[in-house]
Image 1: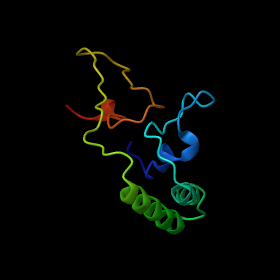
Image 2: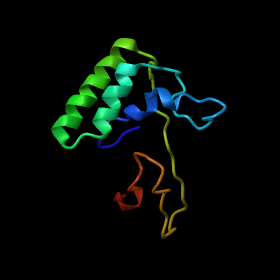
Image 3: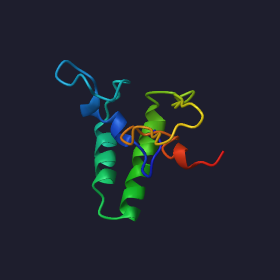
Image 4: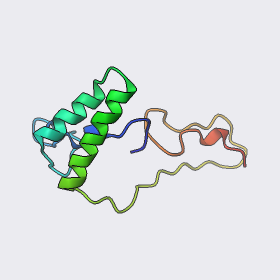
Length: 105
């Protein structure tokens, strides 16, 4: 995922899918108390500098443990026919195509 802040919440221990949490985002099963602490600190930081420092800590821990090795991004596509007006992608779904209707041909 791409966005204004690194998606560290995808690797939180409480996001490991289970019977009680079937929609958990941490498909790797990665669990680290130090990473959880750094990620939560980043997400709750009072300012950008504190958030950045905590995200760097979380990223360093994740890089050292390497619970996953992303080799490619899943592309998101949107199709429409020529002349269609009012086309918009789902605004709640993160995508590189979030503003495709505004991109000039």
